Length: 310
Image (cartoon, rainbow, N blue to C red; front, side, top):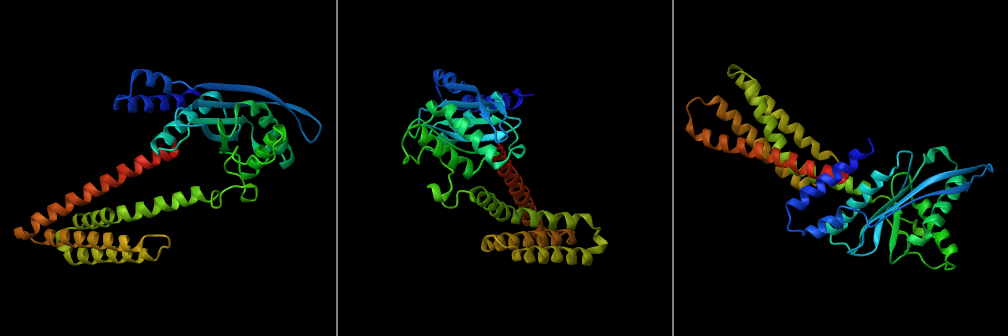
C-alpha cells in the first residue's frame, strides 16, 4: 500500500523524462533522493510519560538551491510518501523557476491526540533531531498537513536556542506574522482555490451554456418547437442570473454566457428549419465549437487537479 503513491510519482517522472531531452545521468540523479534521514526521538510529555516518535526528513535535490519543503504531522506518514512528496517539490520548484530544491519531512502521529503543550514538546524534539540537517542556506522547512504557523514558530525558536542565535528567522517559512512570517500566507491556498473557480467558471461558461442549449433542442420532439424555444431562453436567463454569484469575473462570464445562449438558439432555429441551408453550417460550427470548448475545459481541469493533488 505504501508504495502506490511513490510508484505513481516515479511513473510521472519517467513519462516526463521520456518527453524531454534530459540526460541519462540527470535521470538517475532525479530518480533518487540525495539524503534520507530517518530517526526515532524520545519526548517527555506533559504527563511525565516518555514516548518515542519516528521522524523523517527526505532531501531530494538541491541543484537549484537549498532544499525546501513542508513538515507534516499525520498518523499515515511513512518513508515512501515522504520520498514521493520530496521529489515532487523539486519538480515544482524547477517548473516555476524558483531557486530551491525539494525536500519533505514529518512525524508519524495524529496531532489531535495531543495537547498544545505536548505538540510543542514534540515539535521541539523533532527540531533538535534534525538540527544538523537544516539551515537557511541548506534546508528550509515549512508547514504541511497537520502543522501550522504555531508549529513553525516553535521550530524557529528551538533552532535559535540550539544555535545560540535569536535572529535567524529565515530558517523556516510559514511562520506567524508576529514572528516574521508573510501576511496572507495562511489564506494563500484558499485564494488559489478561489482563483481556480474563477477561471473555471469563465472558461466553461460558453461551452456549458451552449451544450445545455443543444441538449434541450434535440431532447424535445419537433412538434414542441414552442416549448423548445421557451426552455432554451429560460436556461439562458438562469445562466445570466448566475452572474449574481460573488467572486466571478463577471465581464468574461457574461460574454461567455451570451455566446453560449446564441449558440443554443442557433441550434434551436436549425432544428425547426427542415430545408434552410443557411442554419446548417453555423449550427454545425457552433456545435463543434461547444464540444471542443468543453473538451478543452475538462482537459485543463484535469491538469490542474492532478498538479494540485500531488
